[in-house]
Length: 137
Image 1 (cartoon, helix red, strand yellow):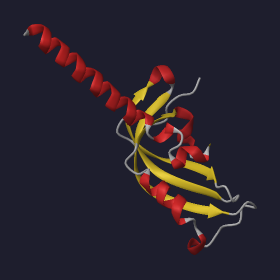
Image 2 (cartoon, rainbow, N blue to C red; image 1 turned 45 degrees about the vertical axis):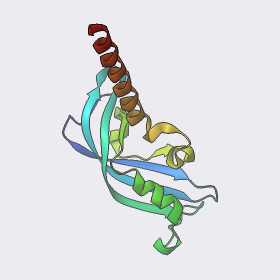
Image 3 (cartoon, rainbow, N blue to C red; image 1 turned 60 degrees about the vertical axis):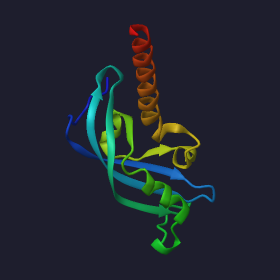
């Protein structure tokens, strides 16, 4: 059974890797701040506070010079700063989590679903308050 190596309020490096369509790989390390844990699911709730490091490699693992980095995809990586996500305890070991490119482009909601759930929950709560108010009138 996985266990958390960090507690609420602590930070740890969280690394993601994506394979680009032309074969390159992007590796990005974020400082993840633990907001809460979900022990029943063996997960942290974290906010990606800053992009600490990153590199782009060709398909053979050779580092690309910074001027050859994909501006389009690195912009998407930068946009992840500030995102709140849930992540398995195993992610705290520093190894890269290999992600589908769709998570970076937003086609898959991995980096937005936590906020989406919060927005949906706020809407449900607002509707319940309105119904209660109407019933009281």
